[in-house]
Amino acid sequence: MASSTPKPAKVFPTVDIVLIVDGHSVVLIRRKDPPFLDFLVFPGGHIDEGERCAQACARECEEETTYRPNPAELDLLMVLDDPTRDPRPGHTLSLVYTNHITSEVAATLKPESDAKEIVIRPIWDIQPEKMGFDHYAIIDELRRKRLSL
Image (cartoon, rainbow, N blue to C red; front, side):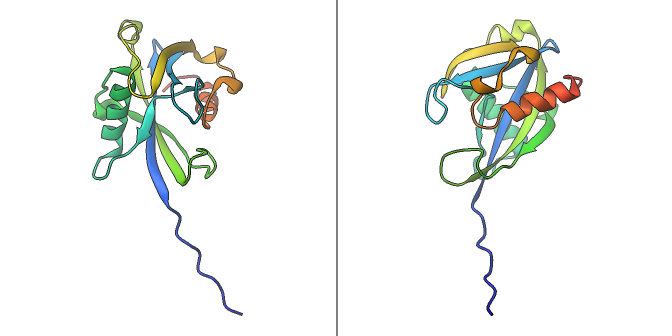
């Protein structure tokens, strides 16, 4: 009986960022493109070839919110690796970072790229049915840690 060799997975590395506003709210974007059109997600996207993860996170944040955090000030929160997390072809694996900002900085954010709108919500007011991808798992983790990051 011949054993079959597992086929290597095509995994696409991505990043997401949680901008924590004044220790109790988070910045979300309302998507203007499918998948998850009009759903709330955290800013993020694919890592470009040759790019460090934290640099990609800062770049994606700026592309979607106009705010560019310092990559050295980003903290790794968690990894999202469910193969079904993105309905598009392929398996995405996302490194989720956090960064603290003030409400004054949050007030300057503007939607760009695939963001239709910037939404700032208290962590306890976010419902799972309004979230795209598997980003509600991030909310659960933040609540579990009580934003004390």
